[in-house]
Structure formats: structure tokens, C-alpha cells
Amino acid sequence: MSDSISAKAAPSEPLAPKKATQFSQRLKSIDALRGLVMIFMLLDHVRETFFLHAQVADPMVVDETPPELFFSRMLSHLCAPVFVFLTGLSAWLFSIKAGNGRAAVSTFLLKRGIFLVFLEVSLVSFAWTFEFPPSTLYLQVIWAIGLSMIALSAMVWLPRTVLIIIGTLIVAGHNLLDGLHFPMDHIFHVPWAILHDRSVLDIASVIKLRTSYPVLPWIGVIALGYAAGPLFTQRVNTAQRQKVLWISGWSLILGFILLRMVNVYGDSPWAMHSSVMETVMSFFNITKYPPSLLFIMLTLGIGLLLLRWFEKLQNTHSFGLPLPQLITFGAAPMFFYLFHLYMLKLLYIAAVAIWGLNQGKYFGFDSTWAVWLTTILLAVFFYYPVRTFASFKARRRDIAWLKYL
Figure 1 (cartoon, rainbow, N blue to C red):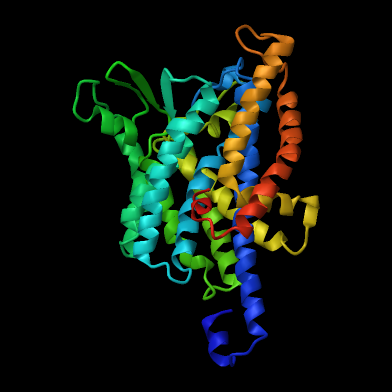
Figure 2: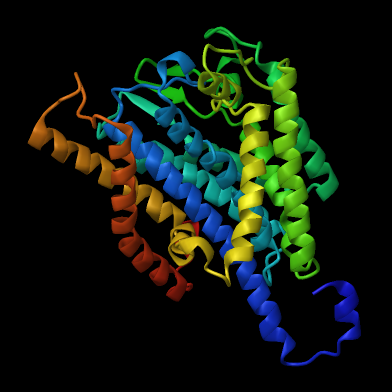
């Protein structure tokens, strides 16, 4: 309800359930979007497990990447920016719960950020390699989210306007730093590798750290997600919120198209190719590591439009979309993440034991459609254990550590 309507309406019992339902719908749309991008993540990780013989670079090499593989990879580009943005938004929603002031939010973000960093270098890293001790630790998306949450734990004390300015400057301006590099013996080599320059860090000749997800742009994204939080309060009615999401989403997408056409800033230039398909692929061939300005504009633009769409679909069940299943996946994201990594690794080991290495030094599928089919089957299978954990988590709110998952 808007403020004007609230001021005219006398307090009464019937209004409370309506408000609760509206608030619940907003939370469900967030979970549904999170669940969708996790399915896209599953698709990409099935590709990385069973299609690794068909390597893709970042950005992809258009002449060497079939369209079906290119656009499958493009779908996964939505995952990290949407998830990081929703992490910031969820942190703001946590802050407005009874008893959660800025100090409580800052402390929670700091603790959970540290927890995620530890999770990355332990259970997540082991799930990818099954090596102990590992020869190389890959610092990927969970690491980036963890460090972004640690940064946000300090930024929550800033005024919202300042937070928006900082987030925008980081996202829009970090590509100006693309040419800045430091040699391995330089004092800034390690911090810059963590912030912006994807690199391998040799720690005392004992272990190597691969900074796969430089975190500076993600700090900007999580800050903008947190600043978007007030859009999801009772003071903003459904029509107002959906209008803002519609305008913001399309503004980012149109801004992406215009800036990409200019072809001078925001990512590696695109080029005309011999076919229309390859030219289109080149135009949308954007850089993820670290995420370029154009990468973030396109993916967040689509993400905001999807968030709006999910809120509109909640009571209609249109197009046969499995909305309750997506909401379930989005309600237990960390469990889903860890569970799917270990299941994929075990399935790969089993496949090698049964069929051997049929793609050079890898076991792999012969076509992209098999990657899609496997993803669909695994999503159906994963639903039941994820639903069980999500239900347990909802029932046992007295277990403090569950909120970290």
C-alpha cells in the first residue's frame, strides 16, 4: 500500500494479512529469480564437467565456438551478477527485520563473508578437484561473494545516496583500470590480483591461489543491490515497484546496446564476421572475469526484468513455469550449491569408471543437447533433497548457524 492510502485507512485486522501476503510475494519473487539462475549455473557446471573437452575462453572465441555452446554459456552469465545483486538486496531485507539495526547487519555480513571465504577454500575447492592437499586453490564465486559481503559490512554505515554513487562508480569506471598491472615482485601485485587482475599467486612455494573472480566489480554490484532494498518495502506498492524494475531493466539493456554499438569502452571490441550469426555472437561476447561494465549492464538489466516478471506470475502460474520449484531452489542456495558440486564430481568419476576417457584426457558428451538433457534430469533429481533441507531450515529457525546457509 502507498503512504497516502495507509494514512486514510484506519488500522484493522483485515489489512495485516494483505500486507504480509504482499511482502511474502516479494520475497518469493526474489527466491524464484535466485532459483532460476541456479538452474543456469547447473547447466554451466554440467558443461564444465561433461563437456570440458570443448573449452571456452573468456570472452569466447567466436570462430571456434558453435552457437549452441555459445548461447548456453551466455545463459550462465546471468548467474553471478544476479546472485550478488540479490545478496545485497537480501542483506537490506535482513536489516529491516525487528531488532536488526545497522550494527547487527554489519556484524552478520562480516561473519557470513568470512564463513563463505572459508567455505570456498575448503569444501568448495575440494568439490572441484578432489585433491587434498590441493595443488591450486581456485578462488571463485563463493569467495567473491564472501569478500563482497565483508566490504558491504563496512558500507552499510554510509548514506544510501553515497552507496549508490560508490556502486555506480565502481561498476561504470573499473574498466578504466584494465591496463593497470603489477609484476609478481611488486607490493601491489597480490591486492591487485584479488581486486581486479585475474592471476595466479604462489604462496611460499607451497600452494597456488588462482583469483578466478577478481572482486572489485562485485563490490559495486552488491552495494547497488543493498541500495535497491527500499524498493521492496511496504511503502512502495506493487505497481510502483514493477514500474521502477521495468524502467531500470530496459534502461540497462538499451544502455548496453548503445554503448556496445559505440564500441570504444566497457569491454573488448566486437567485430563484423562473415555470417550474421557470428556477428551477433561477437556483439554479445562480453567479459566475465572480471565482469565488464557491459557484462553487468546486460545481465542485471535482464535480471531486473525477470524479477518483475516473477512477481507478476506468482498468482497466475502462466506458461507452465515451475515457479514453486524455483522458489524452493532459491530458498536453500548454499545447500544446492554444495550438493550439486559433489554430485557432479561423483557422477563424473562413475562415468569414467564405466566408459573411460572418451574425449582425449576427459570423459565427455558428444553434443550440447546432452548437456541440456542432463541438466534437466539433475534439476528434477536435486529438487527433493533441496526441498527437504529448505523445509528443515524453515522449521528450525532456532538453529543459528542455518542462516549462514
